[in-house]
Image (cartoon, rainbow, N blue to C red; front, side, top):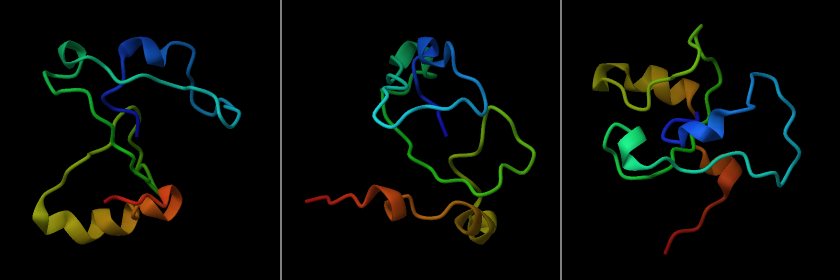
Length: 84
């Protein structure tokens, strides 16, 4: 998921593009290009985009919770983040 990035960050990106490890790929967008949201990052794993392109829900109805939890596993599986 790449929402909330600066619009300039999308220049030169395309689906399937190889990006070497360690390469900077984006910058957070200013609130003016982010629907007035302050700059922030979503790190979301998505198993199946279900035919969607360019966007995927970052939130869902509580009634759809299990479906989205199954399709979007905990990103800490990759991040191994520690918070104190």
